[in-house]
Amino acid sequence: MPNSRFEADPSPSRFLQQGSVRQHPTSRNSQAHPGVSALHGVTHRNTSFQPLPRPLGLPPYHYSLANNFPSIVANIKTAKSMVFHVIGDTGGVKDAEYQDNVAAQLIEQLGSAGASDPQFCYHVGDVVYFNGDFDKYYGQFYEPYNHYTAPIFSIPGNHDGEVDDATDGKTSLDGWVGYFMQSTPDVDPISQDAPRVGLSLPNPYWTFVTPYATIVGLYTNVPEGGSIDSVQQQWLTNEFATAPMDRALILALHHPIYSFDDFHSGSARMADVLENAIRDTGRVPNLVLSGHVHDYQRIEKEISPASATPFLVCGNGGYHNLHSIHSQPGDIAPDSNAVLKYGVDDAWGFVTLTIDETTIKGTTVEIDKMGNVRPTHDTFSYSAKPITLSNPRNVPNL
Image (cartoon, rainbow, N blue to C red; front, side, top):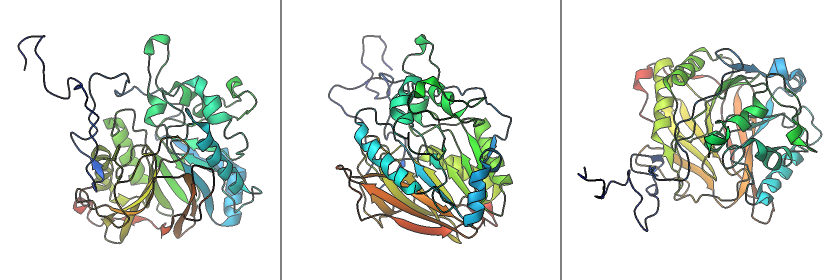
């Protein structure tokens, strides 16, 4: 340690070095480790762990699709499957064209709003940039989805939770709470000519109860790599332990557990969160959804001997700056044994999931810089049947 306040401390955790750039993930690796994407004390952003707002409801923070949208559940029962969109990192803060192009394709897929069309959208975070401000919601949320008539549900992302200046009365997640956690849902005046009735989600982390899937949504807060407290970890374990065995279990979180990108990488911290829940319950999710990294990736990791678990990164929903992928399909990360199955880092888009009693099917839409829909896309199919481990203590390290 320096013995004078005038001496330099060479530790990169204390000071930014002249001419230096942020550290980037190692090629072909899939997770962030100590020293990767390091945070510094000298920064213009407040990326510390932020307190959560008061919940609207009581634990375990369940939100029932049947209770709140009975007409959607009627459509699902008629179709004998549930179709919905998954999207993330959408805010068009600097160039709204890309978000608008994605929104146009989302709207086109709604079709005639029939039983076999997408019934809702699940947003995996970063609804608006950069600090989740309430006044950003018209330009980045209400107006772009003015003609998307289906409901949009969400978990928050790190930018939704950031606060740039707490001295002006702003609190973390106040913009997100203002729409998604209304105690008495109504149309907020800020939506102006694009009115949309708010939602009454019970908490920033919450469980979506639907006919064909239980979607457990974490709030991984603001720090790079994500961060949850022991209360949320215990809640996650309880949700895995009590999830119905007659439908698929899906985990959603903003910070990805695996990612083959050259900017953020995945999060070893979030891998520990999932690993602890599996070890304590024996239940393995059928699918893991995430965002944060601005591209699309489908990654598989062998957790259960029965089948590989798919991890989707759905972070190309409209934010202008995309993140490059440093690996090719088929590459195996030596740090985690995760396998990149498909990736696109030069197009925006979303995922459409179709879930029935036996299968989770998915397809992507890829939109280039000029707004054209590409003929290429990812398609996949995985089991929707419950996945359990006979000996959870033998779960491989994630």
